[in-house]
Every structure is written in C-alpha cells, then in structure tokens.
Length: 74
Image (cartoon, rainbow, N blue to C red; front, side):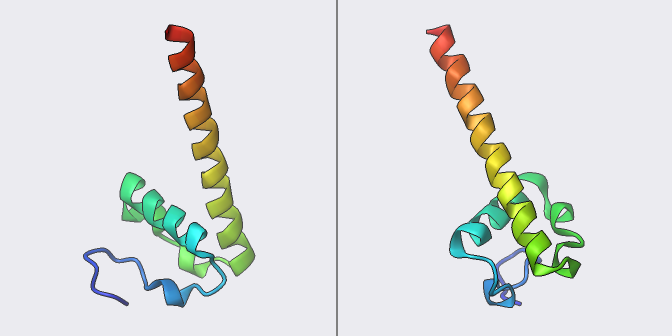
C-alpha cells in the first residue's frame, strides 16, 4: 500500500484495471468516501471493472443532463 493519505491500495494491486478505471475509482472514493471502496477488493476482477464502468456511465449521463439544463436555461 502506498502512503498517499488514503486507504486505497496501490494501483499495481489491481493490474486488471486500466489507468482510466483507476482514475474513476479514485474519484469515486474522493466523492463518496472510503466506505464506497469497502468490499471492492473482494470482488472478482470482472465485477470490479463493471462497477467502475457503471459509475463512469452514471457520471457521463449526469454531466450531459446538467449541460442540457444549462442550455435550456440560457
């Protein structure tokens, strides 16, 4: 584990996650807290990737919604 001030393991502990997946995971933990990461290391690799991808999809749809709302308001 790296001493980065958080309890996240090092990225190299998850070689099946791409750099983009890892960035999303770090962002998720920074937004939702370390409790969002609880249990994640115990999931199979495919489920870990799927969860990260679902969060990415959710975030993208939320950003698109906010952008549309801003466009409608102007």
